[in-house]
Length: 351
Image (cartoon, rainbow, N blue to C red; front, side, top):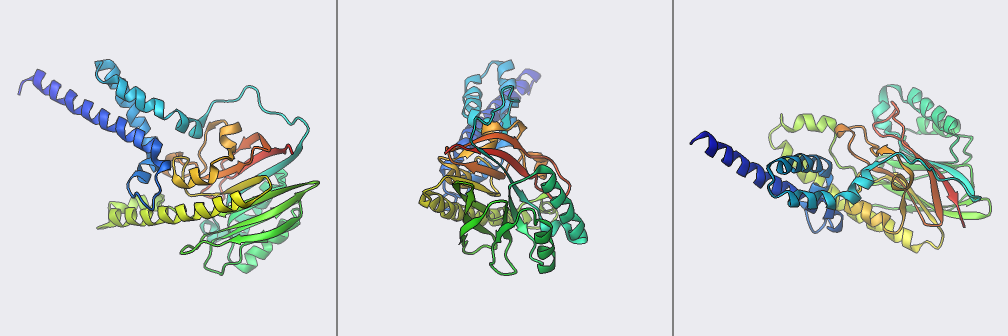
């Protein structure tokens, strides 16, 4: 084979690869519309969409240089505009301001209590001091300590948020908790079958207004930095990991439907806080969000990641809220005491 023929063959394969990437990108953007309980492959494409999008941009540049099938990549990137808005926001030169409604500060934080076993008290003390510094009104916790002694200590340290509730689903469950400056009423546990995760719905009395607050922790992905390293070293590990992730996606889909039912049953404005363990290109996110507003999309800045692993590409922790509520500030600072970033928002109750 001559040099010219070899170059043509390489170009041919690159073009085919680029077209496949373009098609896969479009499928990934559409993945939230596919229920994982009915489709097992498409949801995975949505999970790795950031990587696919990078490949698509690179292939688009190549096709632009070679002037071949450029329209396919451009169409694929155009499909991703909505996804880009969910993952990256340009700095807002005109931040929203409070025009007279009641202002509250909300924080949701997966504190990863199992990640701090060597110094649980010290870790929790830092979290409490951080919450104090941020002057939080409502603090939603995922992975509240199962250890009674540590949990009691945390509750005492958070006494400046005098109203609280947490899931009581047994010692094997990953608890969620709500601490608030405002009275809590009508507590309703949301029970998840076949899962150690949990959620709570409750009413908060904020002066003359009532909010329906939902704090949730959906099923884990079963995929983390440590597991990535073991995939290539253990026979059948990749297959087992994918199978487990598929099962967990189906579980999250069912959990998301339960939370959506709770949202639809409420006659009051909603604030949802929690760790979905899923990205904005997922069925779980689409199901829970629907008519709610996404805090990051409304007033976030920069790259919207909340999980520290997997190259800081995943936004899986959210604050969502009804249209009667306005978000005026969003922050997700990096902190050393968890593998998640907290999400903090200033919200205005306009009703």
